[in-house]
Image (cartoon, rainbow, N blue to C red; front, top):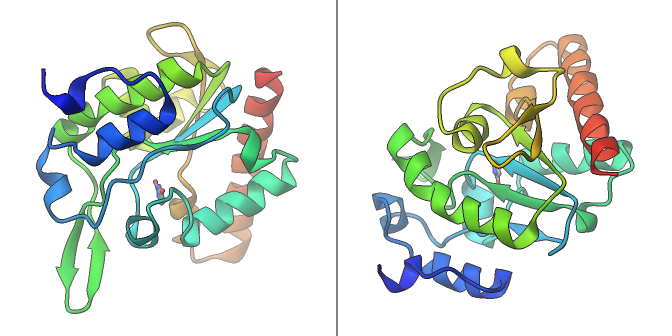
Length: 202
Ligand code: URA
């Protein structure tokens, strides 16, 4: 077992161990690891896909365009971000250089599965009452197999150790919907999913 695989006793120690992660090749090109952040005894944990360009530079999850939409929706749902724990299924940014830009690439099944070690430790340390999986990558990580969001939408699923889980869309998907009426309809469904999770969190 390498140093980066020793179980951490605190979120701070976990973030330090994550910074040394070489479990998959994504650490090589990313600026830094982006650990989960938030309340250490949060009753609700929200899981996204992976850090984007802004998150990779800031070292914090959900601080870019998708993060702004996420924050607005949380505020509308009356959920204080500092009362929840926000993390990603994959902790390093995967991208393809294109001129001066870095274009997002989706993590593959192997990368998601390798990174699940860290998500598992966050789950043990925070021990949330409810999970929110935002998007297919988060869902695959939490369930350990590919499952469509539509097959779980509106239901309360459970991960292996019994924690209730709400499956919803990823906010970056909302940003890609061109038609503003359609985007608002989908955003309302996202808002309803967050509200439901917050109610379940008690
Ligand atoms: N998208 C994610 O899935 N996570 C982030 O931290 C930012 C954008």
